[in-house]
Amino acid sequence: MFMHNKRLQYTVRVSEPNPKLACMIMEQFGGADGELAAAMRYFVQGLGEDDVGRKDMLLDIATEELSHLEVVGSIVTMLNK
Image (cartoon, rainbow, N blue to C red; front, side):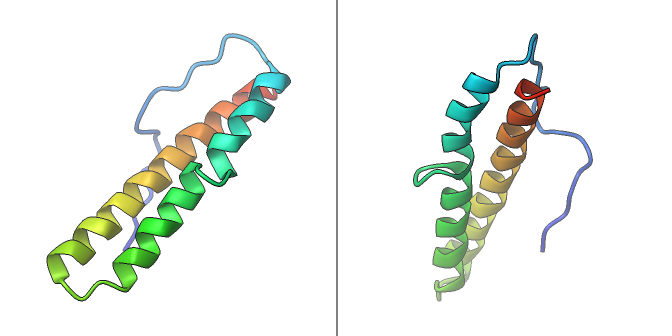
């Protein structure tokens, strides 16, 4: 169901390390309203959907949220170097 493209959807650039900012951005990564939570919400909603079109749409959105997770994770990694 998922394919991993080895390049990020968006170019990520960080000019200098900033661990304090990385900690703040981690909330967007795995917090209650972060990318991981959003991906799981859409994925679970999609699994429970009977309508094929809505199910497909929800799973597509979940996949998109996973790509956001990868971008945010890359930013955090670069800020911590």
